[in-house]
Image (cartoon, rainbow, N blue to C red; front, side, top):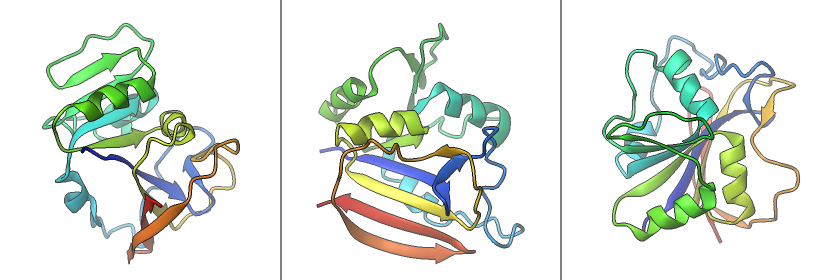
Length: 176
């Protein structure tokens, strides 16, 4: 069965964006080292991406303005906006938990929860994330958008792997 994977980066103090929403701090300790870490391995097991509209907009305007980086996958953008879907980008006005339930019933590779915190926390609250791939960037922001809500339920995890590249630490957990 397809797995739901939260693959996301956060600062050492737990934020996924600065106070003004920026992610320009998502770099390792040596800014000239642009290594992809485990991304290439991770993405080979994914064929579906789920993200909120804010993350979608940030990818289009800040992170990859010249091309949609997930064009080979089906992307589902959760939004209340009236946006025009294309062959690979679907704008949906649905509860993320229902969307994930429906997608898991279909054949395919794993499902990536790309962002943001609101999308991730709805799935955490419903215990629907199978794998947590948390990348910790060597930066302390002090303030910003936290990854985890303080009112989430307890979920016991098992560490599957830990690795570090360029000061960036990746932790991979599965539910126990």
